[in-house]
Image 1: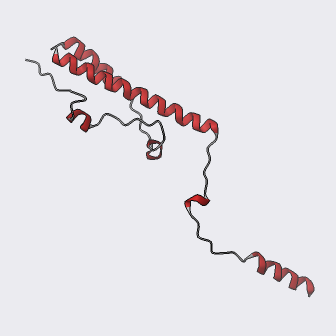
Image 2: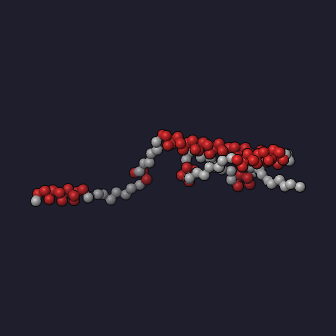
Image 3: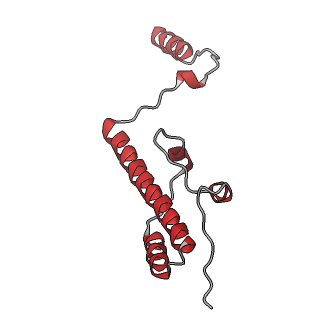
Length: 119
């Protein structure tokens, strides 16, 4: 009989918990250094691709200004061949993420492009 009472008491005390409100500061998610290196490498590759994208768009604009069809075709082909990475939203919030060329960049004149029509 004593065993049962002790078992019931242990079960009763084991099930008691406090209703503490949890916050974000109570949780810490860590990354291994290897995983962070992977993320940094992906972001660096994406940034390099976007750097080349901006360079090619500027060269396309220069070729258009100079009516240089050969340069225009060359840089359009290079621009099309550039890999575009689709990154998850959480990775876009990481330090080192570079925003892509936007319509606003084009409208502000930072990137100039227009179509060349054959006559």
